[in-house]
Image (cartoon, rainbow over all chains, first blue to last red; front, side, top):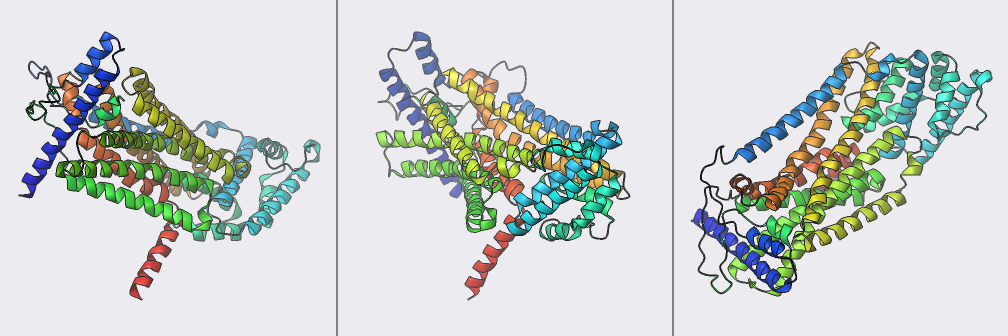
Length: 225
Length: 319
């Protein structure tokens, strides 16, 4: 009974829709007399779905459907394999020298630092500003370590090039890390950890070097995981 | 006014030509070999209702929680609105048809024609809004990662709202223009080129972000915790594939339908593809259900807001 009703409604839908199309066709013909002949012919033929003949088909009649979905599936799987291959093979960054590796760490930390400030607001803006000013202090301290290449710009932390200069010119990585430990990273990261990540809270017990790298990874992985 | 693309939206293969308006009761259905694949109305309504409710939930959660008044969540809201519009369109269309079947609305009325045109332009608005919202989300994430320190200056709340206003104005204007001038090929070609272009651009943005994440993981791989990075990189690859795979699988069938209906309506192969139009429409509504899961519900803050909302509701209900 229900299936009959649904079938009836479906046929009713077909009838209704074809009637709406017919209405539009008539209104098109009356209102757009100035159209060229080819337009008129094409429009008229557009509504003529009747003369589709299904004889003499070389391939299966649903070949476009099957071909489209198979192509789509192949493309998605290909994309997935390309992405996993990117994870396994060497990266362009792997050939970097140690100095640019340090620069990358600095940039990574900077990238990560920017992320929690905007994303979750699990701590108040006050603390965030305080952390940022501490970080400014830290970067300034690193900069002072190498007086020969001290930048003439002020502590303009809004540009990555500044960081590149700092890290290229800066002291050893240990000095950076000493500065960062002064920056009270474990509490900072701990707050963020409790609020956001469930799986990767390996940071509290790890040495600062691992800590920094883990923190650097969080930002981009928070988006992608 | 001619509305061929929208009327194409509701056109099925297998219809005969209507000889004249007066003989409307006389025409017969010429059932060809490719019958229209019918999706039951219950499935339609269930999927549409689920999509609307879920996206409404996301909107309410973002509005209620002050912590979520950030550009990132505004773009997610924009995506939720466009998904809601798409599901709403399908629901209204089916209600409209059922009302006409029951006779509450006349079939030749001017009001019904205008209503139909308005609903079709709503659907195109939803499609364009979806594409541009996804683009905005990808661009926002890109700026977050690559311009992290300047992010607060680049993407202020005011700028995000301005960007959203521009996007929606453009989408509304384009949808009305497409609905009005759909009989010209000049509107179809840009419309169908926009789709792969946007997808390609979003793919590039995400791949660049993915490369950065992988570089980070490579750094960590040199440390004693090497086992972790394989898993996280695999997760990143899976996440990216899901983002783009869902977008493709839900929207590409419909876009192909529009192309085929424009360029080869009489080809039997094309007619057979166009007979599965209802399935394509249902896929678009499924996209409205899946999108909040892969964008909104990934945020822990949003999830905790939901829990609070439901716990409060349950608490009040228990009282």
